[in-house]
Amino acid sequence: MRRQLPLAICFVMGISMVVQFFIPHRVSQEFYRTILDWYRIVFAFSLVLGTGTLIKVHWAKISKKSKGWQYSIITIGGLVFMLTVGFITGIQEGTLFMKVFEFVEVPLEATMFSLLAFYIASAAYRAFRARTVEATLLLIAAVVLMLGRIPFGYYLWHKIPGIAEWILTNPNMAAKRGIVIGVGLGMISTALKIILGIERSYIGGGK
Amino acid sequence: MTTIVLLTLLHLQISPPKDVRAFDTPNDAGGSITITWESSPDVEGYRILRMALPDSVYTPVDWVDAATKRYVDKVKDGVRYRYIIRAESGIAYADSEPTDEVWSHGNVFHRGRTNVLIGVVVYTTLLLSFIYFAKRGKKLFVRKIAGLDAVDEAIGRATEMGKPVLYIPGLSTISDVATLASLNILGRIARKAAVHGTRVIVPNRNPIVMPVCQEIVREACLDVGRPDVYREDDIFYITFSQFGYTAAVDGIMLREKPAANFFLGMFWAESLILAETGASTGAIQIAGTDAVHQLPFFITACDYTLIGEELYAASAYLSREPLSLGSLKGQDWTKLIIGGLIVAGVILVSFGSDWFLGLFSG
View 1 (spheres, rainbow over the protein chains, first blue to last red):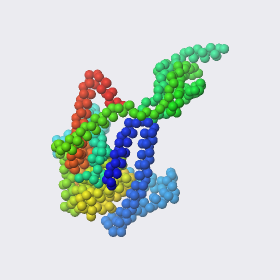
View 2: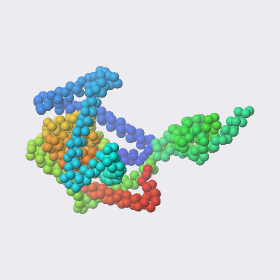
View 3: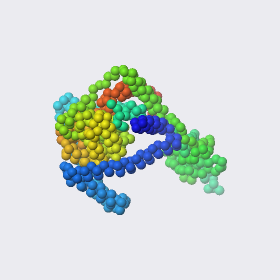
């Protein structure tokens, strides 16, 4: 029963959502909105659960003085601070909560994102080493594309931007569409296997 | 008198909109009527006039510019209406003939999705057929996927080194099929890791995915008779912030030094930051995503990458369950059919026939 009930719920809800997709009637739309509302409610409760594990994990690190336990103090301190400030001042524009968000959280995220530029440089160095035929082709395509995107490429040879565009819209697009078709079929197949209970490792089953 | 004559002349100069049709908007939830008309020359715009029966007076609903030839009116279901489209230019105007009575209602089938329904039925039939053959014991060939063959090697390496395995189930929600596929793979990997007594660390960005991950790993440990291996604290929530999560996972990789990193699911811009940090720690890395734009980053920075559909095939491949393998064959045959349709489409369109394309439009 412990396994059968989730599988039965999954089957009924899965089939319902497939049928709903083909029915534009108001009742069907209402059903879809209700499911989305349920999702939001579950999300809100799971956030409490998630925050609970966050505190538990970091509290354990602090008590055991595990490696990097000082960061755990900052994590829990930040969580408590933002919760307290949010409850006291609210989360509207101009409140302390929003100021901390705008002037601490957002710049920190931007900093992390900007690291990507350095990682791209190191990854490109590795990817473009012409060790194999495929890597050499990749290197040539990348050089043409990079030159095609800057004025210098045009001055070097006026046909380079056109060649770069052709690489993007023909071989690149063909490969992308091939992957996308495979992904679409894989998605339907996975969904079908879950709905029919063939794939049940998400509830801990399967061999 | 002169004004009346002038107005009459101006009125006569504008042609009324022709071929005015009002009909229940197709494929909708109800509550709307669509009106279409042929445009009149030299007009500034059109005023839509509506009469709800049994009233006898037309009231203005809206005004649209001269380029518009279609208007969707929000109405009450079941009430009968008539419409007039008035062409206007300055103070002059000309009314169309009233439309026939029309009323709106909700549709029970979206006709624009008939082709999708046929596609789903054909594909599902194929999948079920191959699943049936597999169930009857038919041997099915599945090509080798290097990235999945390396899973055992990665877990074995972690076991030998006495280090944990890091599993990232993507950054998306539970409703994303890529996340579901990733959770299926987590079940397989957790089983293998539990057999060897290896820790699996699963940091989560989504609070709904987290308890599912906990349940999967717990059940996997129980299934192989190693409940002692399960540590609830190893599967935890970090933050919903994309780069906050990335920073935290980078920190885990640098502090815990996992011997194997799995990045399977949906990823965005953080993919390269995660994979490059992992590569710098010397861990064996297996990635897989259906996010086409992130694939080059994973291919560059990881030892093995599951490209697109391989992510969805992974669970079946790892489990070798006949039922799951049957679905893979169904996918392959459907791809063959799609390939055939693409070739047929290219030939037909090249010879000027467009009806084939129409079969695939909504």
